Image: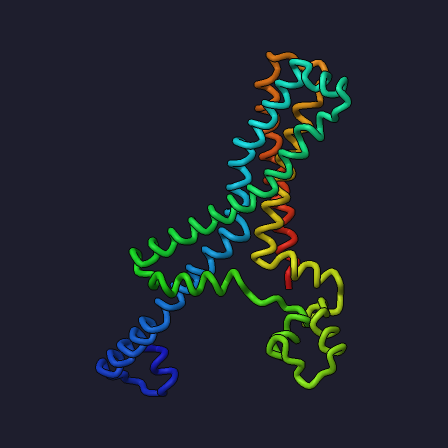
Length: 265
């Protein structure tokens, strides 16, 4: 009533008038709030799992499974003098074990991370309708739009404005130059362009998974080889050290990536 009196200037507000305004306001809220809730839910799920939770949880799981397994294997070779035998044969132990394992993990980790993230996002499409938050089709559309956002680079903008291979009245040389322009649309600084590309959801997701698995494998390698006179009794300790240290460094690296994300304009 005080608000109605303030806007209308009437001292006595009719109850019918108040009821009509309440019905109008409730109708407006019922029309605008559900779509907004559905959009915020989809955007939150996409950003949370693609930028943060998906790569981190997968890396922590791989730290226990892949990192611990690799550290145990190399530590066993170290304790049974197999690494010394490889050196005697003129074969580098690092090239024999670490390089193939790192190469395989760099292929497997992004695939596992993408699979886990896609599964989590798909589960979200079944959870949302049960709580009255939009529908599955709208959720998937909003998630897609939140992940595959356009890069704010002048070359990408020029490509879109010229409709792909159409020159838009430009010469071929001018068209190629404008399409290869990697500067941001809002800045000429090279650092802003790097941040724009690396913090794009798709690239950010891939870079985090590759960085995390590299950290895990490097920590496992160092943990297993740092003691030259390792005994079989010390192998379980090496595995524990590898998993704990790798997980902690991954969490710290995730914090560093979060600081990079905050630098995005």
